[in-house]
Image (tube, rainbow, N blue to C red; front, side):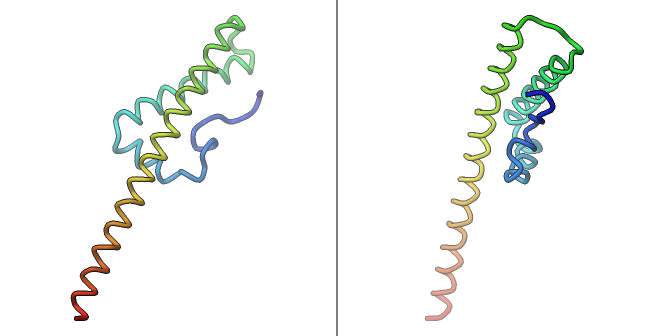
Length: 103
């Protein structure tokens, strides 16, 4: 829709920290992020009337944007799952050490 922001930070505000971390530390995510961002900007230019490509072309851009959005979302979820798993593992390790120290 015209005027809607489709950048990843507006699409997934609850994953701001994960997006930032992945952009800085994951080349694959960063590349997909940049592709998604470029597509979003191109679609915005079309919607604002700066460009007038065919409807088929615009539709293909929107499908590509959706593909990248889905892929980025799954990368974010995978990263979050890894972080939670790591936190649980560290907490178990901490509790184990604490239990040994109390004996």
